[in-house]
Amino acid sequence: MAKWIAESIFTLLFIAVGVVFWVAASPLLERSTQTIIGPAHFPRALSVFLVLFAVFNLFNAICQRAKNCGKIVLNVRVFAGAALFALYIYIIPIFGYFYVTPIFAICIMFLMEYRKPLQILLLSGGFTLVAYIVFFRLMAVRLPV
Picture 1 (cartoon, rainbow, N blue to C red):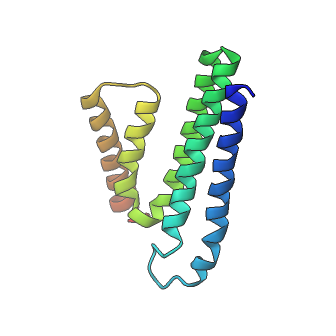
Picture 2: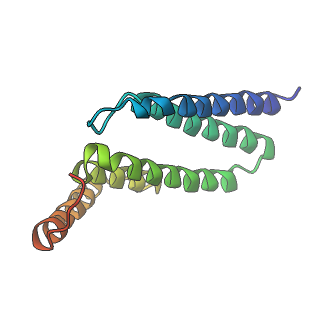
């Protein structure tokens, strides 16, 4: 059996385990109290990370098989950006908009291969500050804080 086929099968098993964790955590949502973070969040977070890393490993196996890494790496960056955006939407209610947004902006800029640390910090912090002033203070928009 070729190495990339074995890696693909192993990776698909990890994706299946991640889905099982997600489904198995569903009854825990009913036991949640009034808190935002309940007993279901930890296994679900583990399942999300497990699936994300498994998908990345699957793309890596396909890339090595195809010998066309440039095109696949670009697709991995697109999927990683989409996954980061989904994670961003998921954790805003948990940690708050003003804590999560600068971290998300830094991760997206890093993913786009922008590597100037001072400008990354200024842009992410500046955008969050402008959003705070304009939306939270001036327009009184209720943001999940």
